[in-house]
Image 1 (cartoon, rainbow, N blue to C red):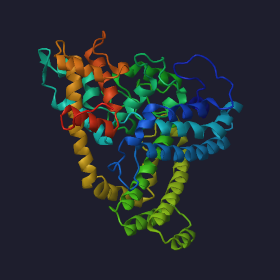
Image 2 (image 1 turned 90 degrees about the horizontal axis):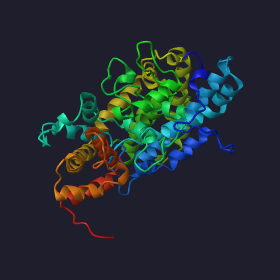
Image 3 (image 1 turned 60 degrees about the vertical axis):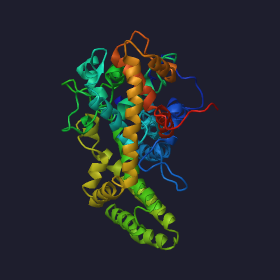
Image 4 (image 1 turned 30 degrees about the vertical axis):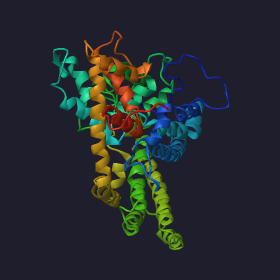
Length: 455
């Protein structure tokens, strides 16, 4: 890409018609479509970090996504204004986009960034991968499970990736559904392609290839999106769309700061630790500390004090991230920026690194978080064991035939003329869409721990 006008597309994936001329812009319509998406609503019962609460509020995937969208909207608005005022070559339409629409695009992409994540937080992804890695030698149809797939397919399954699953969910035509998936704008879809490569192309030397962004079965959709913006280097490797950096920064800012607020709320971190961390960060971000401390001194409630500092930190980080984005705009446009906006902030704000270290030590390794991870491994392994064998078995037992009735029609390819990989991906579409509660309930029923009753 050579200029900011090339980052924009006014076309919708899987849809050839034009806009309907409503008062909502096409970009605003994306936000609304995602809000009403059932996969998005199911995020309310998917773990973010801590176990889903009883009487104390902590974030789940839904509230996290809503807050990331809010932060992303602000980040997009500030950055869009900066682009509009600095690039005199923009057409009238493109100028209007950066002034009024970029914020909505970033908010929509932020809203959708976690829709592909399975139950039980990030451990859900690892649990799915773990199943295939530990069952590769299982005998099925007189061969091993691994031998049912080609190398690229097996890499997808043994390194299951929520980012790739998000693209699949948003673009895939499932059985009985309309083509084009959710028919989102190309620019919205490009903005969530955090890792524009396949599972066999990952390379930790490059920030945008640490993980992968599409399954082999969704390669055509990926290529269609990247072609829309000419997101290819001369060596054929794809690079990130510039807007991805803003979506990524909004997510990074939220979990860095809000996870600490949650940890304080449920008693894992003391007010003193969180307050010291946030005040130190604000100091490094050149915040008006005298005014901040004056207001903080008036707040007697501990949770309210932490919430106040959380808001100040997010605001300061958003402004700093936008500043860094604009400073590195040339490298970001041509796909040569091998970093993240938050990583760049850390270079002048070492306390952001300290906050991350505290989170790793005190939060992500807390016994309640580890317990969720262990539960996720057991639940996912049992469910996948039942359904993978049922869909792939050439000579199904009567029990396996009954199991297939539990898979929704749109994901059930067991009796279709489909490859083992496609049938397996159908099962993963079903399983990855489960909430923590539904997966746990199904596990208990499969294991006979709980006897189902008709309701």
